Image (cartoon, rainbow, N blue to C red; front, side, top):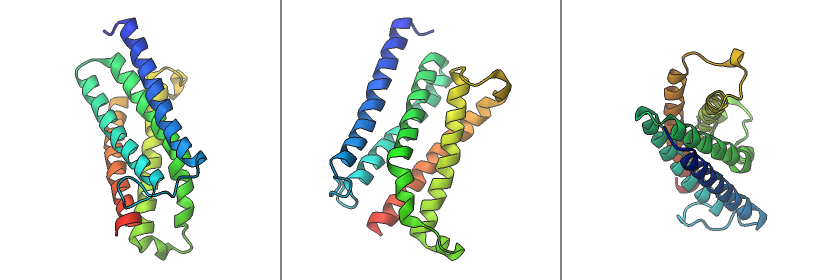
Length: 180
């Protein structure tokens, strides 16, 4: 069991990490630098920053899986809550707005790699984000008991797989938007 001091320290670290990451993304937007050359050289700065944070996110939720497997549930709870909050912030600040660039006029539009992969990424990411949010709300006892899922370990595993799938689709999206 984790000590209260360690848990407080972990929560403060999580708040600083999420706040700093989202401030970085918001700062890029507020400074009007979204379209500036990114540090990877292929895409714009906002896409590169988002890509880096998404890679950390997938690594972070994967680390949370190992925390749970080792029985460190308090650390697992703080870890997963942190990454889910960051993910929701990135969706709101970066990804939701970018969907305007891949509007679908007819179903045949989905056959194009850029549009098809982007929408597949958005669909998988939306389901994963909703599942992650549900789990975090249940884990932190925010959801009423009547809304709790009994087999939530299975949902956690499926959500982790969803984060990996979404991350890989995010890499493909980046490729089709900026490299291909």
